[in-house]
Length: 74
Image (cartoon, one colour):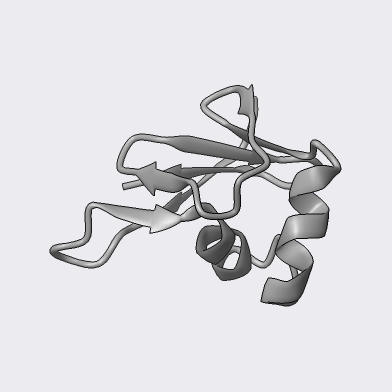
């Protein structure tokens, strides 16, 4: 069974940028490294490869990071 971590958006927020989410869940140590990780193809949003750090991730989306548990946004 795949482990899924849940990240809750703040009240009133409808989305979070993918780069911010990756930093929040410690998938990257710094914001400067987000683009490098995205370009490796290690990130998927709802099963689709994603390379845009500014992609808006919304409630219900699942972000998969190679080597880490999936992250569901609530």
